[in-house]
Amino acid sequence: MTDGSDRPKTRADERLATTDAPVTPASVTSSEASAVEGSPARTFWANLNNPFALGFFLVLGGLVALVLGLAVGSLSTIIVYIALALFVALGLDPAVRMLERRKLSRAWAIVIAYSAFALVLVGVLFLILPTVIEQIAQFVTDIPSIVTDFKSTDVYGWLASTFGDPIETLTNEVLKFLSDPGNIAAVGGGVLQVIVGVGTAISGGVIVVVLSLYFLASLVAMKKSLYQLAPARNRTKVADLTEQITDSIGSYLMGMVTLAFFNATFTFIMYLLLGLQFAALMAVVAFCITIIPLVGPVLFWIIGSTVALFLNPVAALVFAIAYLIYMQLEAYVLTPKVMNKAVSVPGALVVIGALVGGTLLGLLGALVAVPVTASILLIIKQVVIPRQDAKV
Image (tube, rainbow, N blue to C red; front, side, top):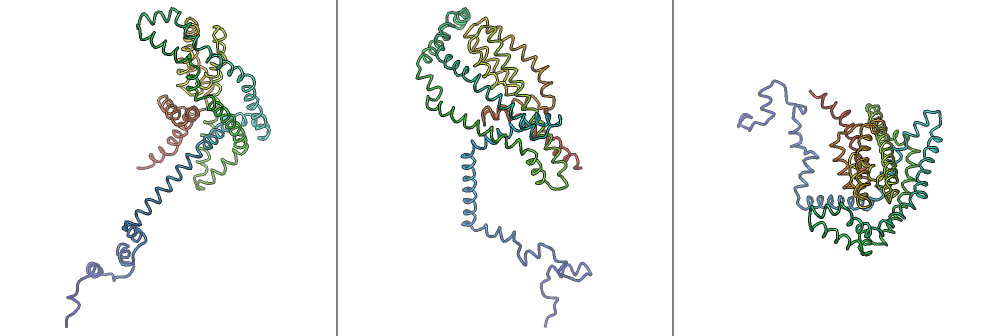
């Protein structure tokens, strides 16, 4: 007979040899228990070793991602409408809260602020829009004669003598292209597509107006619902951060609309004083472009000066100088007063955000890119950096 000393030693025997404590189930490590009993994680990865199961899960995940991507793509227009309506509501909220501070109830403050907003829209549609449409048609019709008249100016003579035949060849090609009404229609995407685009813009505007009214009326409830999604210990911090972000976005949007209105008014007055055509059209163009921060005024300075150059070179020079002076006045006087409550964003990030947003979503993307960037910076300053500073 042999005693138990000849059998192989187990881990429990080795532990018994090194310690005087008896081997109990509690002394067995978790790795040993999982090796004996089997853990759910081990079972899951063991099942994934089956190529068929692995391929099935991968293909199923890819199909779900593809369906979600297609759904988001199909709903992109609706998503843009919702985002624009939310930004309109946030932009009107500072005016509502200002009226609330004057002892008005929120319901009456919303009625007054939204009525003023609706009156501005109606005024633009019925007073400015017909004139703008008329001037667009006149501009398209007068393009050949404008180019022909420009060829007889001293500026064109200087350009032709300086740069030679390329200037004359380029001008003739432009004139030949613009003389064909079919080319103008092709540039605009065709008459039918233009009509469809106008109809879509009108219906989209109605949807945005209605949605923004609902968002403005339920903005306080929406914020409270958002706070409840955060853990109870963090709700105060989340509420404070959300209020700062919404206040900053509202102040920013109101400020940009105000600055764009000043730009449009200045452009309209300068075109009238200089006797240039298309004053109303260029004022609308100025409003739409200069609502983009930092990049917009520079871009419109080029556009407005170029259009004025074809109409009257001397007046174009005066307009270019006057608008440069106005840009300095706006940068150092108007912007600090109008945008004093908005979160400041470095200039480089403003340009990058406007370019990225404009590439992705056009004018709307360029408009919302800066407040989104400001919100991200605020979260980084008040959440991410304090957490990193707390780590030692």
